[in-house]
Length: 73
Image (cartoon, rainbow, N blue to C red; front, side):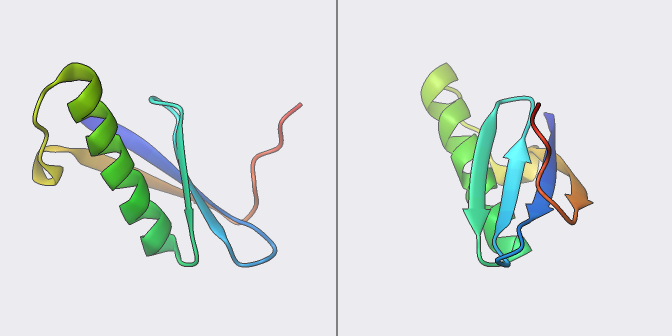
């Protein structure tokens, strides 16, 4: 399974990790913290929603980094 993670950094040094395919968001004080929380949330969602066991090793995440939050119009 391939999912993308978009990473944004706020002015207050908080990082936001987003999985657009599943509409999931997570945040952390570091980029790695935000990514790890999002991965855990993704696995938890897929396991509970589809009652399928996913291992992190079976999931492939692509990372995209941006220095600012996305603009919503």
